[in-house]
Image 1 (cartoon, rainbow, N blue to C red):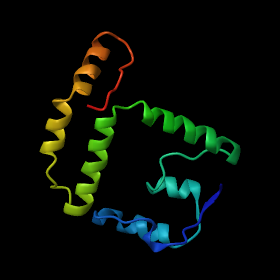
Image 2 (image 1 turned 120 degrees about the vertical axis):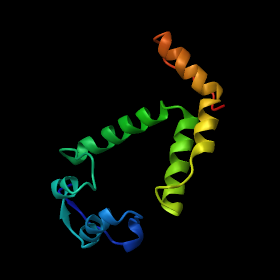
Image 3 (image 1 turned 90 degrees about the vertical axis):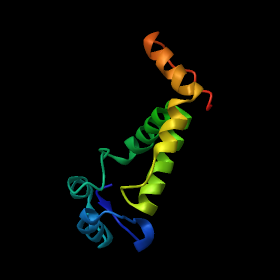
Image 4 (image 1 turned 45 degrees about the horizontal axis):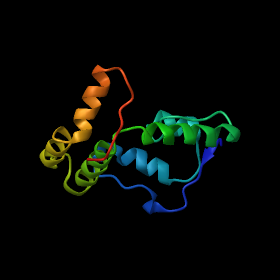
Length: 121
């Protein structure tokens, strides 16, 4: 996986002007993976194809271990930022999370040094 090839201009969209140069470079076509990482399009490069799926599974397991309400709130906050810009209101999301049973469970689990048992409520 030495190169990335982009076939569709709709692959990536951005609302922040500072990313314009990165996006333009990304959409030009072929790019070395290390170059893509250097300009902030990637956060990690695996050394070979055989390592790709195990790493993807590890990341998926890590994400699956996060609180589902917090993951939902993060995705919704990103959606709002994309639609409304960085000034998007997230107060309702913060209040929903802090008032949830999962938030209390997370705090209890931390204090008791155990893995939280998320319920999604």
